[in-house]
Picture 1 (cartoon, helix red, strand yellow):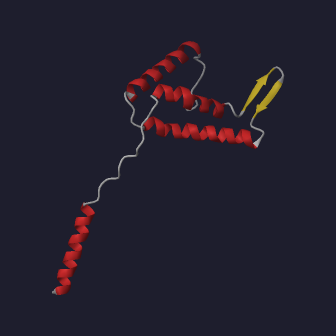
Picture 2 (cartoon, one colour):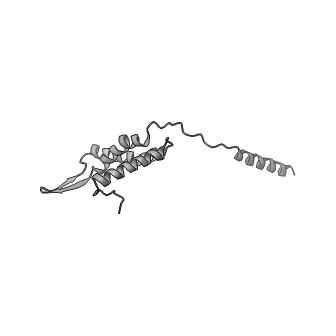
Picture 3 (cartoon, one colour):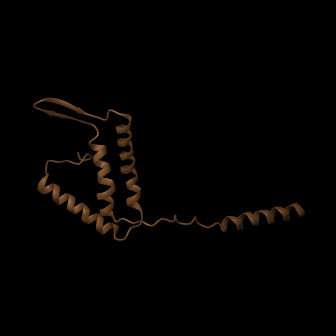
Length: 126
């Protein structure tokens, strides 16, 4: 009987302590850039480095292969790729009017491409 009481007390304590756990505190960060600023100052420059790092130019002089040739150049491309990848996380941080600004940026890009560069296709478009 004494063992049964001890087990019951232990079980009660375990159940009560499991219910008392609190959610972890939110990280202490404060976004300082809106979506438009983030895109223009961080994401777009890194994307340019990444997309322009490797390619082939074919013209009247033949083929010109573009690629990094030093460790430092490859490091710059890798670092730009990380910036592009992590920018997705930055864009998901709570920001004031994120959807409104995002829609404005999307509309501006779409309208500009439609008017001035209709032949440019996004990389993931089919």
